[in-house]
Image: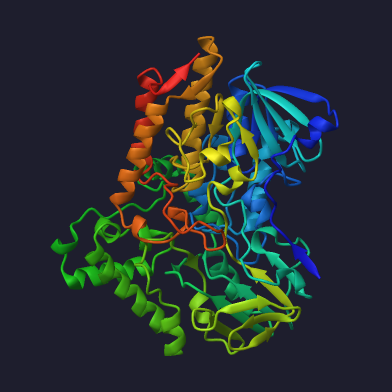
Length: 556
């Protein structure tokens, strides 16, 4: 039996590296994570003259694109909007092969960036951070890794990614299964083919939606165990010819300028026409155009009111539901694939390629676990209240402890022995999504309530990393040794974040946007994890804070 499990939370006991007397290493800045955020942070801080070390649990850079190797894994951002914008030379050198790049191409790109800018020499791989403890006397962070290393730094920054703490379902008997079983995040490098196998996929979120059509083409029988269907829309991916890529390279300034103006940092922005001022015939024609176009236009290129007005959302939801009925031949299966508990776009929309058509194949079976709940995993497969499904492989597409999960799995201790996971127990408490009170010189670059987690990720990452880098330069120039947010600034930011949730329909739906996770006990209430104000507003907030002398921060 092969069972690959997600990492476990770090022990709260004394760090093992402290016990074994490992030698300490000193640097200005420690960065946890060598994905998109960690790569750019290292480049930017090195450019500003800070000695910087990046610690990475994987054996190579790439972050989410290193770990997620499952078939079908790819962008939902246009490739040429996802790449870094900081180097014109890099933009001209790299040729994207598809409009929405698959995981291998993206990983190759990130490795190319690392090699081009000689970043690997300041990265340490194969080491998982277990403890990060603030030493008040020395005004430094002491960081321990699972391989016994100890690092000291003035500043600690997290680039751990928003979806990097996988969760397994709370189902009895997982350890008993005799076949291969793994979470999609921990996809084994050698697992490529399911030909002739009976395969089960538990979960129908964004990952399940991507993997199902791929496995369907190989498996003898595929059983998809679904509890809550998602609203999905076609990706419409296509190759990029050399001629088209050459043309794209002439428009990068225009492309990034457009991304900077949209709320999500994508090429797609809301249609500002009033819904009721457009005739029904025009609306339907517009929606047909959106549905046939590539990327997120179908979600965030729509009338703005579809995400704020329940009646408008209901009308658009009915349009999408009809599209599912048109694509799935069996009416009963189609109805089971149509969500009944939330409207289209109120959860992040998975973009798919042939997902609905997969259920037209005779070897693909949808198992509705609301009708026949899973009782347990058995040595032979999955047993529901109605029958047992014998399987050779079992895939857990059961998602992540989103945004805060990766922080909870590290024993992060600030002033007065306060643990971050305890301070955030009922939800994260940050100022600007950048710092938390009681944790001096600790910056959460891709953390909760910041601008990057609800946007086209690299666009948001470049914004926050540039801002934090400028902040550190200011601190250095003024001889300031310690920075943390004031409690009143944290309280004010919490109010702003909560108020912004009320402006959209996101707060009406159970999703990772609201901290919901059925695979974690106690995660059925709302947690305010993301900033819904959009990228332009967030940048203005950052600029305003900086221009006002970094108001809201205590500087010592």
